Length: 215
Image (cartoon, rainbow, N blue to C red):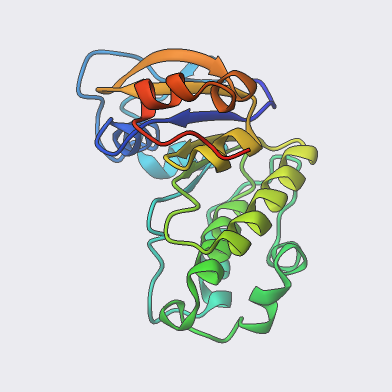
C-alpha cells in the first residue's frame, strides 16, 4: 500500500461520495467490482470490521453528534480502534489540534466549522488507521482554516499515514497530492499529476468545469 497521498477530484454528482460509501461498506458498489485493502477483498465486509482493519473515514459534512462533547466523541471512537503502530490517543489528538483541547467540554453543535472538521479528523485518528479516507474536508471552510488543515494533512503524511483525499476543491487536492485521479460518471476517467492539472487550464475546464487556478 503506497504512503503517497492520492486525490480523487471531480464535479458534484460524479460519484465521489458513493465511492467512499462503497469503500466503508455503507452501501454496496452499484456495479460488479472489487475493493481490495492490503490484498484482501472488503466488499461485503461489515463497516465496523472495515474500520478495524485500518481504514479511517472523515465523512463529508463531518457528521458529529450535536449533544456529545469533543472528549466524548474521541472516547467513543477510540473504543473500537486497534493499534496499528501509530498509537493515536485522545492526548495526541489534543496535541495535534490544541483548539480541541480548549473546547473538549463543548458539544459538537457548539463548534465552528473548522473545529468540527478537526474533531472529525481526530475521531478517525483515534481508531489508529493505516489509511485515512477524507471526503470533501475543505467544504464550507474559510481559506485560512483550509490552509491549516493542509498543513495538518502534510504532517500526517510525514508520519507515514496513507491518505485518500476526495475533493472538489482543486487547490486543496493539488496542494496535498501529486497523484490525481479524475472521476466522471462514477468512473476514473483520467489519471494525471498535480503539476500537470494545476498548470493546464484547458484540462481543468474539461474535466472539472472550473475556472483555472490562479498563479
